[in-house]
Length: 120
Image (tube, rainbow, N blue to C red):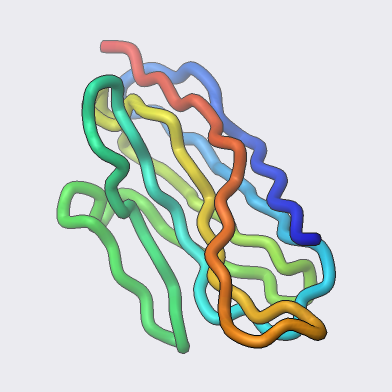
């Protein structure tokens, strides 16, 4: 089994900062990609940031404000969010694509989601 445990969401004022964490554990052979998505009420789930094979991509709306980082020793991905805006309010989901020990193929896994609310 694979578990993703997120933490770090909360309520912050416009211009504030938050740091999200997502720890991945289980029978993991190799992690191919780690990232963050978000879903606002009534909207689809959208990519925020992802790192894969040494490259990183950000949504245009967060470039220059958010930074994704990975601690490979801990299988943990972080999202540092600065200069937060009310439009950043959403549930943020951790995402990972990995190979499991003893199983063929790569699988996608999602965290449970953490609420980020930015007040104006």
